[in-house]
Length: 78
Image (cartoon, rainbow, N blue to C red; front, side, top):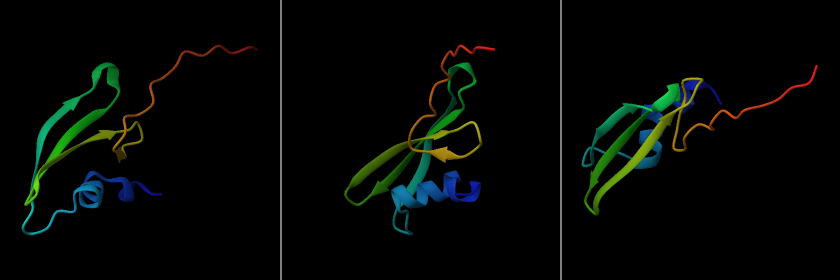
């Protein structure tokens, strides 16, 4: 899967299915602690009521609906 397929715009269209009758907006945008990337909260106002999803930016620049895995300590032998 290339980076364009994991862009924030593509994911918002996939998960929230915005239409001309559906409004959506970014309600929160921040950087996670310890350089773990960014996240945004996107809210769509649909006839059934508001729906919000968090999207997380991964180290390779792609966006996903799950946060990137935390770096773990590792030991190596020579």
